[in-house]
Image 1 (cartoon, helix red, strand yellow):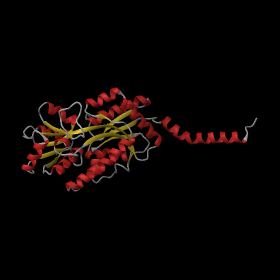
Image 2 (cartoon, one colour):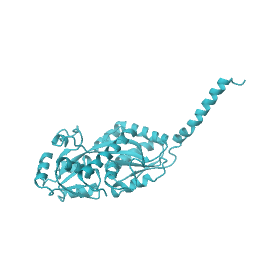
Image 3 (cartoon, helix red, strand yellow):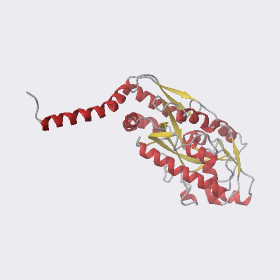
Length: 327
């Protein structure tokens, strides 16, 4: 018995809709069917590396496939980002981008890649406060005293950073501009060398991530004056923010997010985003992040895209206001 015309039309519609869905379903079901590489734009051991490996472990368990972390350091993250920007946009090459390596880098340096046009935001994983640290030989015990000292002796204090265009550099330039002080910027090739120089007393001031600056500060090798976040941290209730220490409106927060090359398949991107949202909601993962002073984010692509666009505009303005010539 043949179906009537309305039934045949309905059946044809269902089959046509199914045909449209089939490639997307097949794409997600087929992804990943080989090893996926997550690139970290820093050497092993730092917070970015740790969080990348948490993501690789989670995705590996979720997909029963291999996710490997590859460290590609150099040029303030530019080498790694250019490599991923030029990779096939199939979801098999990803990168953990940061506020330093993406908006900060792009605001300061003339790059061969664009942080917005050449990448697909997948998920914001964490945020982290910076801190204002000084060598114990510096007499300042607060942000206000540091500002007073810098104004009294302009150009005498050296301000370290872990690279031109890094969040460390730009946080310092924003501070200098807002406070109206002159400190000499001394860039180093990475976080480790900059911190070593600080502890050795070769430089006197630095804006560094809390996870790195807290241990030497607690050991008395450095003195922490304030946090660059918009609010105090629950674990450090007595540590004020820069904003409440004399520079209202000041903030400099770093973040980590998972990206892929531009034009990734939407279904693959959606799958990865969903997994990042699941990952940052797991209590054990949240606990691991908090232990390294990283505040878990929501894992969404929207939050990551917003952070990238916001900071790109902010750091470009900072560079203009500071009168810095882009390299």
